[in-house]
Amino acid sequence: MIGAIIGDIAGSRFEFDRGDKSRDFEFFTPEDEFTDDTVMTVAVAEALMDAGIDAGEDEIKRALIRSMKAWGKRYPDAGYGARFISWVLTEDPEPYNSYGNGSGMRVASVGWLYDSMERTREVARWTSEVTHNHPEGIKGAEATAAAIYLARKGAGKDEIRHYIEEEFSYDLSRSLDEIRPNYHHVEDCMHTMPEAYQCFLEADSFESCIRNVMYIGGDADTLAAIAGSIAEAFYGVPATLRTQAETYLSSDVKAVIERFEKIRKA
Image (cartoon, rainbow, N blue to C red):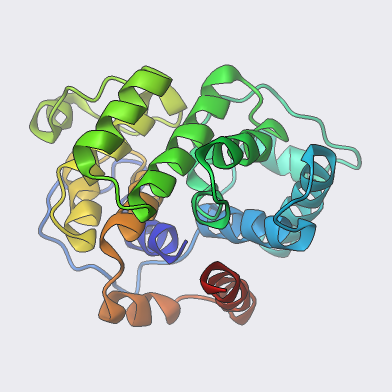
């Protein structure tokens, strides 16, 4: 989960096509901050931990709605989309058929908490359906969680690529050099998930994965959160990057990360 958060922070100043599409950049600067990607990543993790590993759909969805609304209200200026913040503020929120990439950027914890692919995909689907109940939104959440699950279980990149292509019909044939020239800020799953996965697939380390995101540009913080969540499971996270990232985080965010990692290692 910390991999998603590091990606979010590092990409925050490049969102909305504000970068120059280069891998050569200072990783952390005073301009960086955590955004809605981090807030909702910890909100989902907290909900799943509160519900319990064996909880059913209704219990998990109630916990998700409660947690996501609470965290959204705690950090109302984190950069949410208009429909999502309306959902947060509504007394009795309903899913709104979104296919935005928010479903994939907040799902990192799901890839770590469960012991089967079937359960991982099931819970990932539920985390999406409370807001992003469009088939493409659900697919984005399931694919990201599945990639994390495979990576932490020791799968190689060819296996991960094949699974994503076969199970979710994402086109992962384009290289980053092919994507980069015409790529721009876009927030739907269909045009961010394949690109985020490719940033991971062409990386040779956690850090290079995040640098690949800035190389193609676009919705940089969210792409880096998605790619970084998979890269963490595959490579681990350098201690120096984690230490630097933690200086940007509030105590309540760090408390959820600490709790999550204790449960994950138990």
